Image (tube, rainbow, N blue to C red):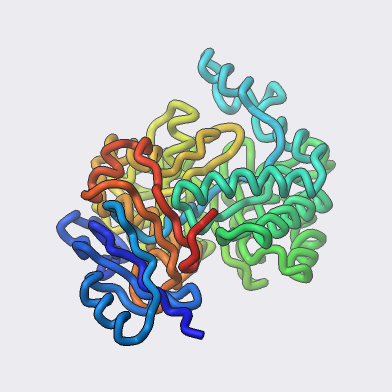
Length: 413
């Protein structure tokens, strides 16, 4: 049976091919195929080109056509490389308190913050957490996000972290989108843990990590390096031991104070995420490393603080991924395109730099070399917007919704 399929024509096909992995990108560098199309088979792109040229081949080879009757602009399926979408409860009270002048740290000391979500998440069953996550995955996929990283970190004990990771795996197995699990058991030191920071991290290494390894629940670990969370020296020891056990590493770094980015570089982490507090010294160090900066504009919007200095990072030759940080506390909005378009306004990013940060550069931050570009051999993950010019999408700052999404060549939904 011939399963080959031609999808198109599209008014513009923005392939994201032939672009640099690091540094600035001008819109003029984008490869845009007018009236383009793609031939796909078994979830993989076989060919990209003009619809007319591909259609002639289809008629000769009896290939079916998924004909698009309206004007659409298509890009690779988007990739959200940093989320905390597995949780229970709300932090609306935190949001109100911040808007009344209290700081993130003050709210945490008063019983709000991460620990508030830990309480609600611990009370939820694995099934309840998986069901809540499935609803959020649906919303993301409808917005054109075909790959999503999801962290644990609201369990903060061995059984509760395992519950979260199992819920993430359960939801991922049921959902059309790809779900990439990350263990963030080192989110903060749990209030009910008796012992020091070092004791807690050693407990994770000795008890939790072997269980995750055995059950194959995640090959990624994260840690929050910040005042009120984990000190740089403790975090580096923890990450080095995880790297010895062949885990991929990422770091919450430089959100409120510096230190995390240097830990990420020293630990040979894949990425460092946040960077709102990064200054010239941190930017210089990152530019000389292979660590990928991941900006989280949703947290800046939610907390009312400055954005990561992404213009300076790019101009220094760094890569850049942009992620939603969707979580119940600092970034409850979860609208990745809206956040990215606002970030681009304040940091003066080209559309090409934004789309790179949401596609192939985000894929690199998750070590996923098979997606983020519309080209032969890549996953047929595609998002289509109802417009005639790719610049319209960010111009509408999240209000222009995806019209159609394909995951591995199949229409989502």
